[in-house]
Length: 438
Image 1 (cartoon, one colour):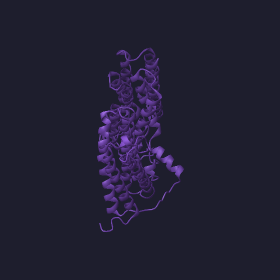
Image 2 (cartoon, one colour):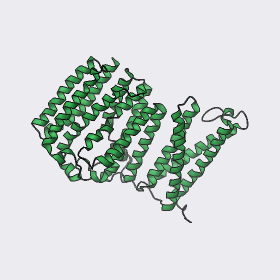
Image 3 (cartoon, helix red, strand yellow):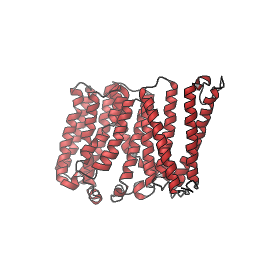
Image 4 (cartoon, helix red, strand yellow):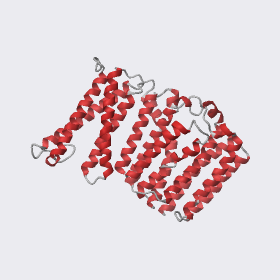
């Protein structure tokens, strides 16, 4: 490792390490000596005693470390976009660094919950592990590079936006907000709405990016997905992985800091469910991939409910069940339309494994069960007349589409079922919101 620090990128990582080390030492000394009491204010303060300069030094080092972190982050995204190790490590280190500052700022306000203290400690440990790994890898690999963007910034912004699957995120946010209104039995405050939906959007967008990172080779074999940014090569795998990890981490910090612990943990569970349980394992292993994997998409309304109520009562679990039962007929209808795609990609979707006829029957069965589950809310006196009438009307509408798929078959009726089921979910959650807030 004689020349391990000869690249500019490696030298920047060492500079960050030294700056963060100094920040940590001075920060600890500030806490032990209670120097903050002699220099009140943020971001600058005027010391009332010599010991107060310790806090001032801590603030100055925090600013310096932030500038170094931003510079290293920028350098990584410009010069290391092809590097599968350095770009994700730098990105995660940056999120942890600013996450630590964010949690520390919450602690400084006083009256913070216990989980914030735990998060502060865990973030500090994770930051040092990530930073140490970054310094080692950058020195060992001697990686240096230049910016080599193939596309302009407009196209790159568009590609990162596509990587988040915005249409799916939008539908998930509708269900999240439905849970938010139903859990609080009223229209939520603007602040709670903003942070819950922002955290939910980041979690869903990050999970979608990680899903596309995992499926990037598979996506090349499907007409529907071959033009996705990673499959088409417009973004590198390192960029997709880094972007997904960053959004997922940010979502947890925002949920934990501005919403509550239960909502944050549920959102994190949804990420793990979708990325690891579904994308890595289920999708390519079993014909029941969509059935079991539907639990990932069913978590957002529970997040909203927890954000508003602080708990998970029967109503939250019924909302989970509604989306759990909705997912198979929705995606099986799409699988019928894209049957050849899934065959080429080797994904064991139901039409590929058991045939279209049996899949059409299962779509009808699951749709009947879905409509029955939606009626549990009024049965248990958890929803009123507005929701009941809407659920019945929308249920008949969706059952008609499913019946046509079963009796008529063909791609046209399956595509209609796919589109109608998306609208059905949005409309029934809208009815739930109006009913809960009425």
